[in-house]
Amino acid sequence: MKHTKLASALACGALLLAAGQALAKATADELAKLGSTYTCMGAERAGNADGSIPEYSGKWLGVPPGVNFAGTGSHPVDAYPDDKPLFTITAQNLAQYADRLSAGQKELFRLYPDTFQMPVYPSRRDFRYSDEVCASIRDNAASATLVNDGMGVEAITGAPPFPFPKSGLELLWNTILPARAHTEEATYDNAFVQRDGKINWGRVKSNYLAPANDLTHRGKTEGVASYYLNETLLPLRDKGELNTGLDFFNYAKDPRQSWRYDPGTRRVRQSPGYGYDMSFPGTGGSVTVDEIRLFNGGPDRFEWTIVGKKEMYIPYNAYRLHSEKVGYDELIKPGHANPQFMRYELHRVWVVEGKLKENYRHLYGKRVLYIDEDTWHAVLADNYDTRGSIWRTSMVNYYYAYEMNAWQAGVGLYHDLLENTYLALNLINEQPKGYKLNASNFRPAMFGPEAARRGGL
Image 1 (cartoon, helix red, strand yellow):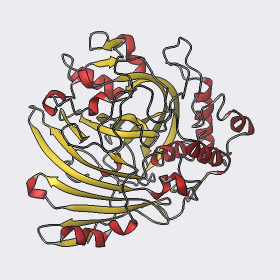
Image 2: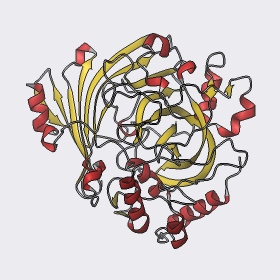
Image 3: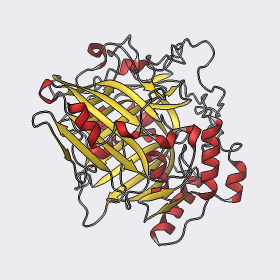
């Protein structure tokens, strides 16, 4: 598929950055069209030429009419229960849709031609963000800026900083700092599915605090951006392990801090340099720390470039995938999740590519992220080894969380295309509760090394 004129202009902007030219803020024309021609988040309001991507309606904020939602902590309720697939992409008709698929998606069809499918549903653009989020991103459009060679950002909290990104780093920071929950509490199940279909199970209790996303206290991006504390419940050999840490708005001034409590020694140790391609705890080396939510942490090891915008079939409105009515035995299958519970839609995405810099180390030599234009969340990622061969492909399934008027990251599916394995991360189907969002009285003192010591005791 050919890139749009907008995509070409953006690619030129990326070349100017590489040449050392200064980047401009949003233009007067862009600012004038923010909230009209463009949504308040900077997405194109119009649909595509043939109507397969609809015009953005933004008609719902919170719980839509006719949906019986019990509130935060309950499992998601489908906003579109009567939707049926328009068609299903299979290995047999793949060529017809190949230009709207990622390299990783095509590899999954190659590896599992008899079972991997993509049911494509009507594309929906009905939910909007709150006025507070829109206000923050409007402020950011006029004033946000990268600092310390892109290792930090100066902006207003509560929304992505760059609704009209002019460089790969600006685009990347939108997905590092999206509009999301300011507190999140849940117990997740994780399934590592081996080549032969056997499953290694894990379970984690997770607490998350992001003061920057508390819309009642919007301010400047200063100091700590977020806190996390994860307690391992399964496997039993690791039960009681605690991992906690802090992320900042400027990784050059304040690198990520992390600590680990080991129940065997009953000691808390700092984890220096935590992040990048270190193995994410409890995943057996199948996922790196910096690919949770497809990318997080400092962007400094890669050279980031905007490739452009394109129309792609991506996971969207993934309510059914998180339903308490769907058991793990139905959902988790050899090779990939059961396509019956997946939902793909056609949407416009930004494509950003990261190439490993010379004299820097990482497992991945190249990364390609696909970022939804309506939410700035990364939904697909293709990761290549240092020889240039595709190695892993990943997707995060989002749904609109009515209780926080924003999109929630749900199950992540991380595929190793060489080992024929995958990890289903953050499953909640068989948990008695779903995600508890913006409803926990977390404080900074509940995170960090002292909190790990208390938790261990």
